[in-house]
Image (cartoon, rainbow, N blue to C red):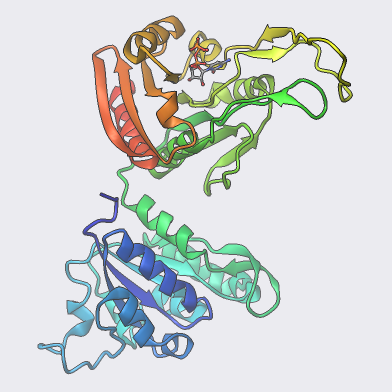
Length: 396
Ligand code: CTP
């Protein structure tokens, strides 16, 4: 079960070289269980063939305003009725200008004007076209008209220039569409999250760490962002790409994570400690590579600051959520940890199931007791956790 299962998406393509990305986007949408109807402008048909889009969507492609096969000859009305959203990707400078003006001289622009559902557009153009005051005026108008703008991104362009205006990648547009459909349960809230492992140096080339992948923390960050929160993610070393639409602060040791979290906590409404923070660090980490000796070697460890515990004990503490990764006696240890750390909500999982995996199983402990979330992909669990947090947040 995914977020887009059963959603009816009308995907419109206007003319631009980024049209090839719409093919991949169609695949991602149909794989997620969405029903995709394709509408192409005449210019789009010069960049990618309707045959490709028909094969990928599994539906006939429409491009003609005067399509006699539509029984009442009203393709411009019929196609968008019952749709959950219209997504135009690529949206060319010309197409966006038409939208801003309310022009409708082809099937896609007419559908957009006659729609009853939300409209999302993914601009795609050369950087000068994007930067042109006329385009920027049009974008301002579209935002005011309540149209969701996805991107654009900055980077290499098909014309050989580098700059702002390239269309988002297919997976990024897919994520934005998923996010669009999420209820905005944390709108206006600022959420601070720690994620990933920490790395505690022994010397300049060695250290102590753990097998946390950061996946759960990043999923929680994404779920909070999709729920409308302003998210700051303090991340230990992970191999994960920085999620879009949030501030990510990279740290290495527990002390650095503590410092980064403390510098930002005063502004946070919610703190979620997902990081697997090392409880101890080597005392006197050496500023050079240690040489081996002949006998045993002893490492002396000293405790790290407890980030969650410190934040929860603040006079004006944000709503604090802890995570517990246990290998045994999950319920007893997790509930005791919640009380010890004095947090209103704690999400517990078995470390052997959670670390590095894409799925997880969570048990939430709060003042009302125990709430079990069935095994599911981490993003799905993260969305359920965010919904639970939203329910417990004090009403202003
Ligand atoms: N945590 C933290 N700072 C630390 C240690 C833990 O913020 N120095 C947070 C984690 O991010 C998590 C929660 O505290 O939200 C639980 O961490 P865990 O290490 O499992 O708990 P401990 O209290 O250290 O207990 P133990 O290691 O004995 O299981």
